Image 1 (cartoon, helix red, strand yellow):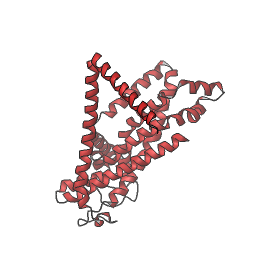
Image 2 (cartoon, rainbow, N blue to C red; image 1 turned 90 degrees about the vertical axis):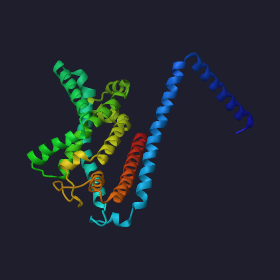
Image 3 (spheres, helix red, strand yellow; image 1 turned 60 degrees about the vertical axis):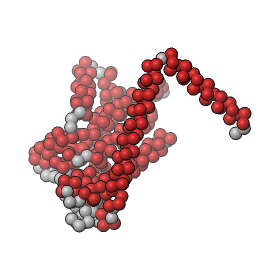
Image 4 (cartoon, helix red, strand yellow; image 1 turned 60 degrees about the horizontal axis):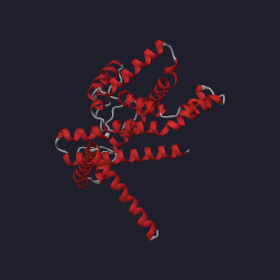
Length: 300
């Protein structure tokens, strides 16, 4: 880059800063809001960074090769079964929750506004129920899952009972994010597809859903984070077995529950901190892979 072009860029930047300062002098309230916004961002980033530093400093020195053994014992406190159970729980929960959440959002966006008064009332009830479910504590979901699946359905403590309970927890999140993603697709896309003779179902699956994929996957990524980090609901439904789950009706312990159990026992604090590091890395990897998949699907 030549000196003249660099001088032009510096001059433009200085001019823009002068304009911003003049604007702040005319509107002091906007300057205060800008400071509060920057402060909130710095605090949020600082809290996250401090948590990561604390977990890494406490956990990395306590990680031992024996903690990745296939079989859990009180001597090695292996987390390998918990890692595999976490992946199984996440996969099964998404298999249950994602189709229901996506199709429910499609109904709310694409069909509800064109129905009868009864249909409109039903939509209002569905949206109110969804918003209510989002605010229910996880311990309440755990107690419900225990009474419904462990006791009433006689699943006992099982992978399936835990996955259904987690699906109920993340379903509102997936529905709302999918609904917003569908609403963000311009109506001109729908009108153009209908004008070319495509039906509603073909328009939804060929035009609308492909354009809404990034928003839908964003909701799925958030749901994955909640599944991986959940403890209370899974303790009452999936159990705390230390073995690798070998069936839908077998008990299991996810990584978050494994860490909680180690902390509660009080004898394995070092192993609990090491588990926290692995849990943090697992969440980051899952989110990174999901984001990569979202980008590839968006390009297509």
